[in-house]
Length: 416
Image 1 (cartoon, rainbow, N blue to C red):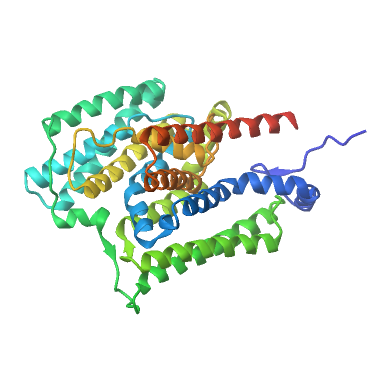
Image 2 (spheres, rainbow, N blue to C red):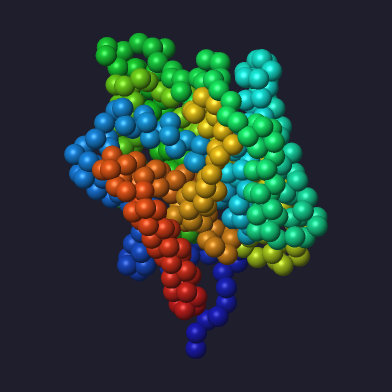
């Protein structure tokens, strides 16, 4: 007769003597542990494979210092949008308006800075305020009026695109002053010297590797403490060394070109901050709870309306950040700015491991998903692939990513 007792838990984690039993049960089957690690690390493996493939197909041009810098500058705003979008998707929603909000916030900034002559920082603050207001508008209708986010943001996509046309009077505005352009086109170099390279960029890269290693080790220790299965220590060390090598390689390439892009610092700060928010704060846990099991979250006392409201305020704010970066990068504001950005952000989140049903996903995964899209786009552009073929490839990649998620869920449900 089988023992049907469950191990004692605290917040869903094994405690006391159950830790050792759970750890033993989780690691007793090497094949299951390998498959689990592959599912968790599959997105990183995919990124490495895609980078290697396009490096070969482009004759090494993809990884040249100039092109790496170009990829960072050209796709940074999509990665910013992906950070906000994955939080929206984890909460069980979707936002179709982010491209229009990018256009609107860039337009507001351009009118204030270019047309009215205000300082560059006034335009940035105004754009952030407009983005937060747009997010609050969406949050009200979703959280308190009970209208599905799909409908609210679809209406917002049309509404804020129309407002962009009104703000700009259907014409483009340019150029921004040099200080504003530095947001997306500026570099930090020469701070620590270097013989033919920027030592500061290498220092930041090494700092990032150290942070990754320490964070990974702490996560490993925590998993062991709670009896969760972990990879073997040699495999953990190998992973850290491989990731560290990749980071330092890219840092070396940047150091040998123009130094550290300012926009990369902005992106790194956002990734670290939102990684902490989603993993280590009450708000982050509540977002996962709402997307994973809404009735259970409500019974647990989660203030669902409040959380949903702030999810969309945050998305509006990050859309404004992306709008500032994009307008700085393009050195102006255009009525058609941000067109189809929402699809790129959604694709990045799903490719990065977010689940279509909500409750699953990570900020880092969304950024890696965005990098996969960026590398594919850049690689195909270097190969002079027709735009129609690029769209087909991106669509197939997104479909495969979602199909893989559905397959894993069905397989997990069938094994219970």
